[in-house]
Image (cartoon, rainbow, N blue to C red):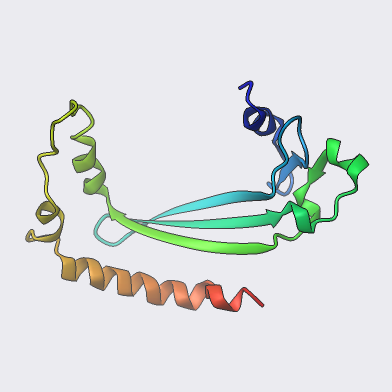
Length: 153
């Protein structure tokens, strides 16, 4: 890409050992303030549930005190702890993906032929079953992943 953002993205590299980004703190016509590196894990859970856990590591480049002369060279984020780490969780059933994909060929003005009832009021799926699954996942995660408000200290 020829845009300033595109040039910045083209300059990104990964450290082969740590998997962390190498980036330019300043590129022509663009100075990023925050940089986020996402890591995703996908798990299959009982009854064809797909659990996606995302970790966002966020670096605030304004807080990193990078000398002006150094900003035009790659900076390895492996040497810096992220300023904040956030976790996100989503859950879906495998067949939902297929149902949504059935609507890929919709023309302008056409409506999908599925309704929320198709996801929440069937023999195998219901709002109650979704809530029960969310509670199970929440209890597993709360024992394994630090709670957000405890990471702010």
